[in-house]
Amino acid sequence: MAAEPRPGSGRTVRHEGLRIGGERVATARTREVLNPYTREPVGTVACAAVEDVRRAIALARAFRSPLTRYQRARICHATAAALRTRTAEVADLITAESGLCKKDSTYEVGRACDVFTFAGNAALEDDGQIFSCDLTEHGRQRKVYTLREPLLGVISAITPFNHPLNQVAHKIAPSIATNNRMVLKPSEKTPLSALLLADILYECGLPPPMFAVLTGEPREIADELLTHPDVDLVTFTGGVAIGKYIAAKAVYKRQVLELGGNDPMIIMEDADLDEAAVLTAAGSYKNSGQRCTAIKRILVHDAVAERFTELLVQRTRALKYGDPSDPDTDVGTVIDEAAARCFEARVSEALSAGARLRCGHVREGALYAPTVLDRVLPGMSVVREETFGPVSPIMQFGTIEEAIRMVNASAYGLSSAVCTNRLDYITRLVSELAVGSLNVREVPGYRLEVTPFGGIKDSGLGYKEGVQEAMKSFTNTKTYSLPWPK
Image (cartoon, rainbow, N blue to C red; front, side):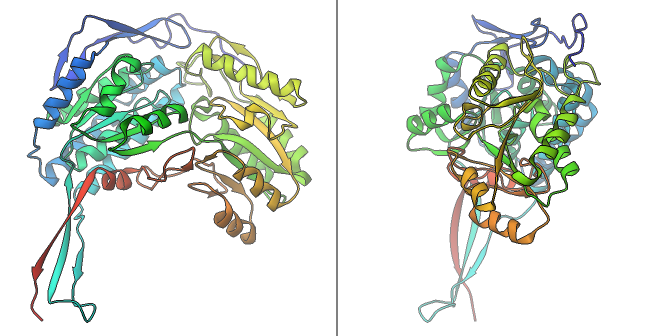
């Protein structure tokens, strides 16, 4: 049940300017950041204008990084170490501005540490290839070499609210590792974690022109980040509608778009139902369900549906939701009351159309209780759209063919998971699901920060994120050849 609020819980007041060229730049206008749970101010940030965006891009474009691979690796590793040392402080800030519970925000700091560690390691790896040219009768006695170089222009990055530290880490760490320059606009709802990370990076030796943080209203500055002639690449994580707007607006620029998901958990008739319930609860409610890879649809075989649902309800009712700053809380708030009202409305709509409520469906401000409903049909908006909150909608199927059709009918194609021990089921799902990833006996979102990640259809253009894939996207490949004796 919901915890009672503690006065001032999670309040961390910070007053920040823009981060341009390593300086804190004051602006005429500011924006207040509010704690989603208490509605108290967390901090005040500057609102950048178009002139600030142009200045940041110009400073970045003019800078040519002198950092060696060793120096880049050292900065990344030092940043990881600093984040570990300051875990409690950083987690408190994430919780205060996002409403995520301390368990989730602490875990996020650990993930960001992994991102910088992997990026530091990758910075030391030789990224070239060698091709011998005497492979055909038309070949010559030469060798062709490749190397990867930073982009000529600037990387423009836009990040969402749901992982205010780790999403930023996934942009800037590969940028540092490849010696690029980046201008970042974090979510206007959760900008403070990005600003703190910028300070840590500068303290760890990152030249300030390599990373600028611009806060403010997206409708005022986003287009300049997308269309400025000195921006070579736009990397965006967020919703589908904005992603498609970026794709149309940026046009002749490289684009890495990691968009939404409608990720299924498939429970086959041979599944270990206790394990399946544990995984489904974790996959549905971690981060308050605000993950593109969170479980959004639960597809359960008819033969085990009732027993599985009972087990999931038990797991759901055992969770403590409420004050995000309470270390015992399992589920904090969603990002704001408007989001919570949206989930409440979708569940109510499903119930009026014949779905059955098994637990939850209680809202207080931005706090929405973890909710289980069954007898859900594919056409209901709670599963047709991406419901970005702690909701577990259960649908039933009779055969694996039916399950595959249900998964692939979605406009999204990000992640998926299955609970089964049958190899024939696993191989069919790997071959036939139109998704970017499939995890067996795990949650859909399981991955390492270094592994390729991304989706297809409305979940993205097929380009992957993850440290290694991002580093490939953030570089130009140059080839050169040399004579080579027999």
